[in-house]
Image 1 (cartoon, rainbow, N blue to C red):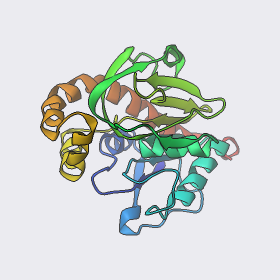
Image 2 (cartoon, rainbow, N blue to C red):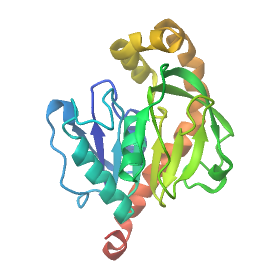
Image 3 (cartoon, rainbow, N blue to C red):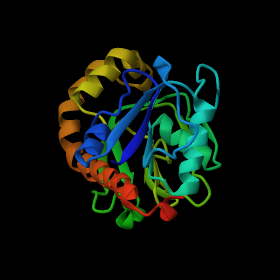
Image 4 (cartoon, rainbow, N blue to C red):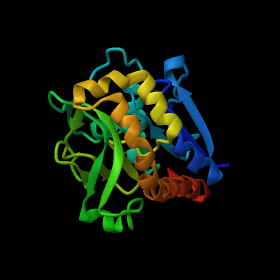
Length: 245
């Protein structure tokens, strides 16, 4: 049975719709809750994909982030082996680091709340984003940003943060925004991090009010992208071992 490793850093930022898509594709979900002390594997030999979720820690610091170096090693293994990888928010920043790029504070005002991402023309033949609309409203919740790794394909931007989505190699994607969210996810974000919105020029109530139309508009792209990623994970499990080395 195909198996996907999911690294979860904090309780509110679970895999949500990513896990649903993987399970729908017949993929076993192996969630390692590092905040609860779960250990990470030394490599991806027992997995057909990896997903690294978000969190409030800094991708460029070991402080309060004891699993950081292990996660970078796993993402590096994915890049070297062609194992499908998806990084969300903090996970995207870690993927950029694993690819040799820099991660750094994005400015005085974080990007939080529902907002538009402009997808680039390179999405036209991207394995996950082909067929997506040129503009997508998504949930943002970040203050750090990153440079694109050498050789990366730039897939999405906003006016304030140029690096919003990228592909590195054939099967690794970084998404700075939260494509995985559902109603429960947004409620968990607001309960845990709602005050962050006040420093970003919005309010928790405004984010909550924008959530029903935001989720309705996100649904098509969400299922398109996450089902395609799940399909890549499932397909890797069926590939000959020589192709997976």
